[in-house]
Amino acid sequence: MNKLILSLVAILSLTACGGGSGSGGDYHHGSADNTTRQANGVWHGTMYSDGYPNRDLTILVLDGLMAGVSYDSSSLFSGYMIGTDEFLSGDMTEFNSHGEPVDDLIVEGVFHPDDSMDLAYDSNHDTGSIALDIDPVTYAPAGMDILAGHYQDLDSDLDLLITEYGEIDGSDLDGCVYDGHVRAASDGTNIYEMVISRSNCAEAANITALATHYGYGVVDVFVLDSNEHMQLWEINAD
Image (cartoon, rainbow, N blue to C red; front, side):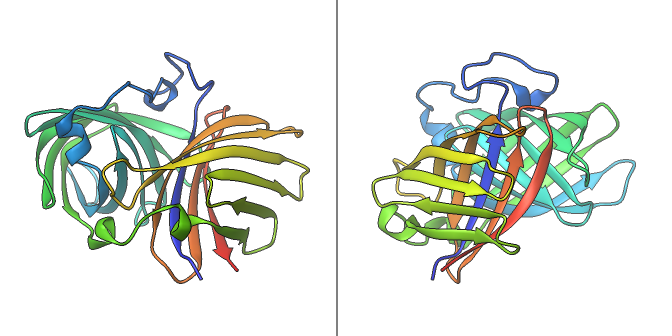
């Protein structure tokens, strides 16, 4: 049995340079510098707002790519983070419980590798700070032999097969076909990047993804399609 958190972030095209929101650009920034790579992992903590209730935040980061969730506000996030020395900066787009983009955030601050992040954010609607600690799952055993498996969502709407060779194949009840590949983090961190094409249906889109492996057969999937609609799937490994 396997358990993952998969963070799927689709963009208008895999080589786009912009979009309607902060998450619509090109996440492939080339070779990540050492500081950005040191931020790789799963981070969990709190968003402290100057004008709204505080809320939880969990993010995944891999070589500058990021995606996350706040369960308190039923919000999803996508974007990027880049670094110089111990300074991080980036853009995040927030999506509401209906999967619609509602805010763009600029974030910057410091991080301590393998420990914590202390960031400030400025958005269209709010300002505040973000305090995150590294999640130990970041250092769990990783590799394609661990990630490989057959996955379905709770309603069997989605069926995905991930092979030890990094291939992804699947389908859903709407007739969509999923085809792509996955790579493991080069530094051994328990984070994976995926590139998937969803075709043969009205919801056709190009998707990129981040994933982290937890064990126990449950997978959370964060999906942002080409129409900038983001949602959370729950899928299970057999």
